[in-house]
Image (cartoon, rainbow, N blue to C red; front, side):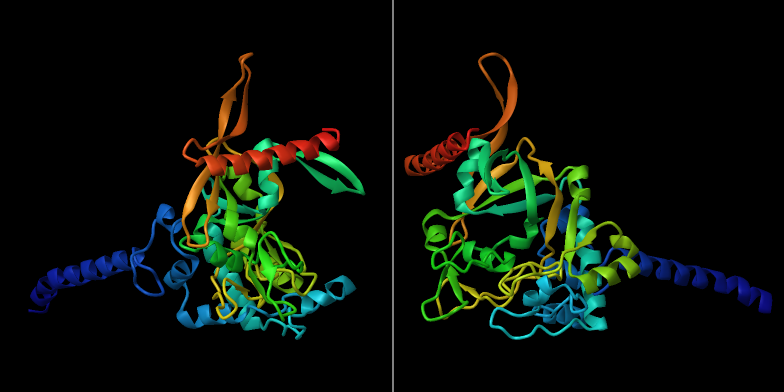
Length: 363
């Protein structure tokens, strides 16, 4: 009888095993933190960072990450140049990161950095004053007190995945990316608020001509050269404890209390409070900032786009192969044929101004 019972129990045990395996398979296709469907690599590129984080991290940890804004990731730095970077824009001292906050930030970057890969789409936001130089292909910079002509056929400096600003209007994007560090009365991204020493409004320049960005498709090499800038304490801990981020971060301590670079690997307005109207504050939008430690060449098909204060985007130009009369082929920006006559005149003026600056510099 015992043998018969053992044999009879096998189908039930098999069904139980299959049920367990099926449950495990379902969990493998679900977000570990909230049970939502696990997004594919392609879907991750279009998911807001906060939504993606909720797939992998518990809500309490996300609240910790949000609470790190305004904290100091370089409190152990003894470099006097970093002292002003330990202050908030209003002059208050930034508290140091706790061990729990450091671990939460490492967990955040471990999740988000996976998507900086070949084929990823990044945005490089540029001041309107630089747009003409990009379209012209050359611009003038100051180096060691001299004017130098340089090509503008690369993406360099601070960038971020396109998903960081999906659905945001021009003002929201400025706040989310910390493009509000200006202190001039009138600036490229922001203008001063009357009666305030550090509050800022969306610039009249942006309201009139929009917020411009280069939409660039990453190569494998370019993606490998996009690294996360972290303050000394956070970077040291990341290098020591996060093998998944090995070679993906570098130390870049924050200098200047109105500098939008946070040292947390998150671009943000750091309390400078970019506003479209004085009574409105823009909320935090979690993101991961990256820096092109080596400039990466523009790719054929890259776009220059303009975002309005109401959120609409217009394609301004496309980076394309151009064949000259002698048969030679080169890459250059081509204005969109769908631009209005007024827009064409605006961009042609910017290109002309860039060409004049290059000529004066001897380029």
